Length: 494
Length: 112
Image (cartoon, rainbow over all chains, first blue to last red; front, side):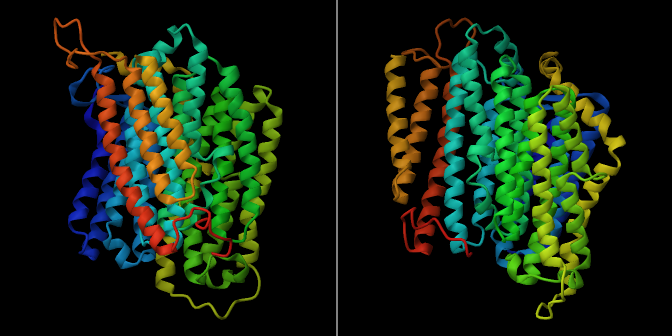
């Protein structure tokens, strides 16, 4: 069904960001306006989600150009679910931001870049055109470059150069891959690509292009050989920025992998999807080991992004409906919990004055609520029932067993234990023990920093306990993913 | 013609990657510029090179150049232009703050 609804989650943050740029010196006003706009954006995203849930996929041919020629926006259930999750995370971050950022940083267009980041992420989820996906990648990366250097400290500048260069290189490879695909398929529209892939005679070259595209998305998503750039740059900016990056940027990469390798490149699964399983296995192991290797709590959590991505790609590699449901479920849950954990680590580091675990002890006396939130988050992340991480992992593993991929399932289970240990280490060393009298806390700030975290943790707990309620939606999503013709028909039916 | 241009794009890619692997920051920035120019040339080549045909799609015109690659390149040029200027400012600031433009020395240590 054609409707302008599909473009609203992109337009609203874009306009918000531009509007706020004009008032950047009036900090109190901008703070409140940003909160209000974020609530509106979330409300609209929720409405679009509800609408798509009731009426099926909504598409929009932008500028009135017919589907294969112009850019088409496709708001299918997967896209709108992720857009809604993005907005919920944005909402929590925007309430956390004023207490975490210095006023100077806020004046330097923090809120503008924040909304532009959301624009880019929502756009990447919603677009149905491969080149347009590249453009939205650039939109969100540009905003992220500005956010990561916000403040301009020595470490920040040094780390952000690496971050920018890696992303720039992968973007250039992305453009080159689009050129390859265009020369073979003669289109950049995803739905038309999916149709034409089946008709092309030389499937070998398509597989090569598919792997090249996977390389691009794997760099963005931080998969096994390509994750080296991720942990350090993610720890240098302000916790709000780290939380946004951790929750959204790698997941855009994972989303693109899911989209392209369920819709377009499904012609040679014994090569591509088998490769994913191997890479997912290595990602799980190396990410979990990385998380154990450091005493910097921000770095521990940054390393934890990597095995989570491994789990999601594992579901794509196994490629059956149960495993894909698991991937999607885990992705939603992980987006929320990673944002919560980064905000939490930021709050702890803010109170103690350092992210070094060796300098913390007995924080449970000063920060009881944050401590227990961390405890719950560790359980969510490791996949202890009844929390949401468990449901996602369970489905991925069920799918794995059904397809006889026993080895990868065992690796997944073992790395879950390592993940649990890495977060529990923060809880045990940082929160247990004698009260540290040297730490003074500002009750008001701590409360303000705690409740956005509580808001996000509440959602993951809800996702876990209310799994009965959310499962049909996720099942519907994976059904659409397993049957690409639903996507193709929704683009071309009119 | 396409083969020659593909080779040229390949040479640009090689030169770009060689520069990208250097230690000096400015060389790395130049490397990314060459690399993205290689990519742009490559898009044009992949859309089939044609001389003397208008890029406009009109009714009744049978001989026309494919407009899509040109649109793609235009978008891509704008993006890489913006990125290059950002990267130049960023490397200037980073070199200034850290007192070095050598990537080996910008590696950082564990204690921060």
